[in-house]
Length: 365
View (cartoon, rainbow, N blue to C red):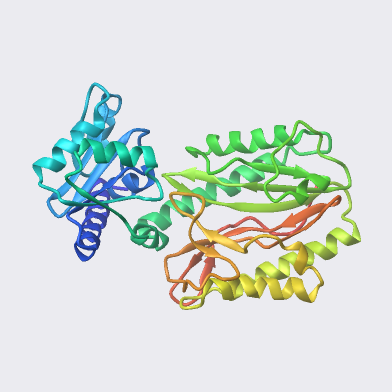
């Protein structure tokens, strides 16, 4: 991202947010979520607060980030020493004569709220913000889509590199470490979430944690991984079988693959998230597998691995061009194993684009 494109992107977001605040009758908002701060200014830290309002945007942090804030943040910058960040924020709000202030109810703890209220000496009305930021973040800009494509490419390349080393007897935890290592080697900032590697019956746990247990012969192997790069996440699940796949594995895998294909085929602007979920469920129901599909079909992703919209049974949100979602139906058989197939998918103007390039055949080790 060039400096000019970056400044334009964050400036436009801040102007949009100022309009949201005006419509809500707020003079400003105090944002403490690192994701919100990053979305509006580009700044990343473990300790920051952002005031955004009609009178400007002011970002507060501590001296550890003094150099970083100067080069990274698109906002007026304040570095506060002595561990009194909140008092500096309160002083700024008093100077601006703020009387009605929005805050992130889903992020600010009760203790944090009480501290903010005390610092403002009870002179400011605190009002919880709506979900405008979450809805806005669901529709990605061209720059964000570019970053997600980059994360997807890293993810897929890392998977191919790591899977070349897999053989029965390798530990689940060893493969997970190899996947993370390869993502880092290819430029990822981190794994987008804790990498899942599960073999045999352990794969029946949708969020299984890798164990120091050998990958079994003649059994399923599930890999669910994502890369975080340029701030944005990717997400992919692929399946393998060590040896010749059993008839049961082939049948269940074929059913899940058809369910995923039908869900992807249903994606286009204007359809509800629930209709995409239903497309996958209908296939599995026709195969007598509906009760084995125990989670939603997918979710949005971006700066976070789980974002709006959720692709579930009762989600009436309508898909829009620029949304990036996962499509990941699965079936889970206790005592035998689980099968899930997942891609990262972009909603386009007339349908969708599957961003994940990795093949979806049941890989034979």
